[in-house]
Amino acid sequence: MGMQAEVDADKEGEGSLSPSLKRTLDDSTAEELEQLQTDKAKRQASAALEVTFRLLCPVPRSGSVIGKGGEIIKQLRADTGARIRIEECLPNAEERVITISASDTADASWSPAQEALFRVHSRIVEGDNEGELPTGNTSARLLVYGPQIGSLIGKSGTIINSMREETGANIRVLPREALPLCAMEGDELVQIVGEITKVRAALQNVSARLRANPARERSTNGRQPLGANVAHRDAHRDALRNAPHALMGVHHAGHLGLGLANQVAHQQHQITLQAPPPGTDLHYRLLCPSVRTGSLIGRGGSVIRALREEYGARIRIGDAVDGCEDRVVDIMSVEDGLSPVAPAQQAVLRVYQCIADGDQSLGANGAGHSGRVSARLLVAKAQIGSLIGRGGSIIESMRRETGATIQILPGDTLPACAEDGDELVEITGDPAACAYAALRLITARLRANPPRDRNTAKSGEGPEAPNRRRQGSSERGIPRNGGHAAQLPAQAAGLYSGGGYPMTT
Image (cartoon, rainbow, N blue to C red; front, side, top):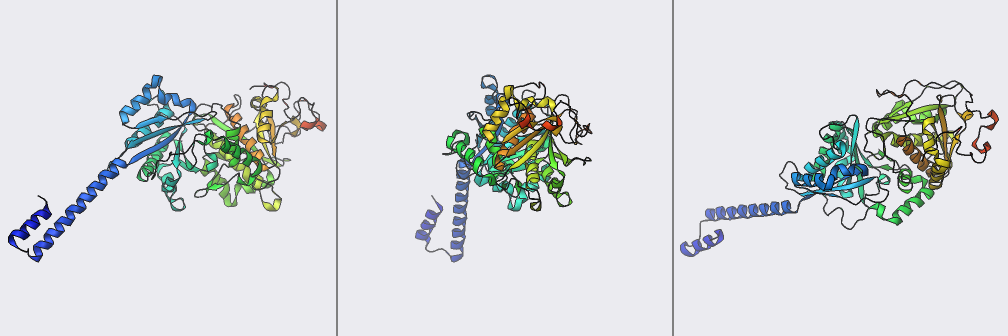
C-alpha cells in the first residue's frame, strides 16, 4: 500500500492528523517523489548518452588499425566495448575518418570511447611496433562537430591556452579552409602536435572536454563528406581564382590560418606522395627582400615568435650578405610521419604572407590584395627534378592547376646568399591566390623528395653554416646577358634543368 493510501486510511479510521504529523508526512512524500524523479532522469540520461570521436588516420596507416582479415579492429572492439568504424576512403583523400562511439554513464571516470580512441591512436602512431614509442614529434587530428568546439577554446582562448600550458603540446583549431576531403560541412579540425607523451596528455584533455560536452544531436546525421560533393570542390576552385582576400583568414581565438589557397591546392591538385619517415628534418629556404624583414620580425620580435609558437616550426632569418638585396629565411620542422601538411609547410605559407604584405608604405602588394605577387625559394639541385618531371610534365601540371607562373631560373640569377648547388625557383601569381596555391604544391613535392646530400643540423639549432657562392658566378655556362628563362631555347623556357637533372615523375 502506498504512503498516500496509508494516510487516507488513517484519516478514515482515526480522524484528522495533527498539523505537525501531517507536515512530516507531506515532506517525506515530496522528498521520496523528488528522489524517484532524479533517479529516473539519471537512468534516462545514461541510456541516451553517446560519446563519439572522429579520429583522422593517414590512408597508408589504416591497415595498422584494420589488421589482416580485420583481426586487429575486431580485437579493439572486443577489448574496449566501443563501436569502431573506418569510413570509406574517398578518391584522392590523404586521410580516412575512424568513427569511435560508445554508450556512456555520467558517473564513470573513463569512457569506453576514450579507451578506444587511445588504443586506435596508438595503432596509427606505432603501427606493428606496438609498445615502441616514436621519437620526435607526432600528431593527432580530430574532426569535431561545430557546436562542440567552444568547449575546447573557451572565452578568448582561455581553455585551449590552458591545455597547451598543462600538456606542453601544440593544440590548434585549424581554419575551415584546411578541412580534409573526408570532413563534413559544419566540422572543425583539431590538431595536436608534439612528443608522444605530450600528445597523449593533450588527447586525454581534449577527449574529456568533448565527452563532457556531447553534441545535442548526432553529429553526422544528414551530412556528406566535403570530398563527395563535386559542386563544393568546384566552388573552392572558383574561389581560388576570384577571392584572394580569403587566403589567410583568422579563425577562432586569433589562430593563424593556412587559408583557401592551401585547401584548394590540396584538393584540386591532389598529391598522393608519401611523407618521409618520422624524425626526418624538413627544411625550406625562402628568400626575403632585406627591406621586408621587419614585417616578418615584428616589434621586438613579436611576429616571428608568434609564428614559431603557432606552427611549431623553427624559423630563422639569415645574416645579411654584402651586395645582396635578399636574406634567406630558414623554415624547419621534424617529420612526425602522420601529418598531411608538415609544420614547416604551414609556416612557409604564413611567413610568405608576412613578406608579401610587408609595410604598406613600401607599396607591398601581398595576400590581402588582388594584384601580382612573387615568391622565391632556394632549392637543392638534387630536388629540382621532382618539380619539373619528365619532359616538364609536373611543372606544367602545377601551372595549369594553380594559374601561377612557375620557373626554374638560370644560374646567374642566383643571389649571393645562395649556397653551392642551389637552384632558384620563382613563383608569380595574379591574383595572389594562385601564387599561394603553387607554393603549397611545391613545398609538398619538396617534402616528399628530401635532398640526400645536403647536411642539415639535427640538434634543432638549424642548418650548418652555408657554403656561399661567389657573387655573380655562373656555374652552368649561361651567358650573363641571357639570365632569364624567356631567353632560353623554347623547349627549355620556364623549366630550365641546366644540364641533365633527372626528370622524375
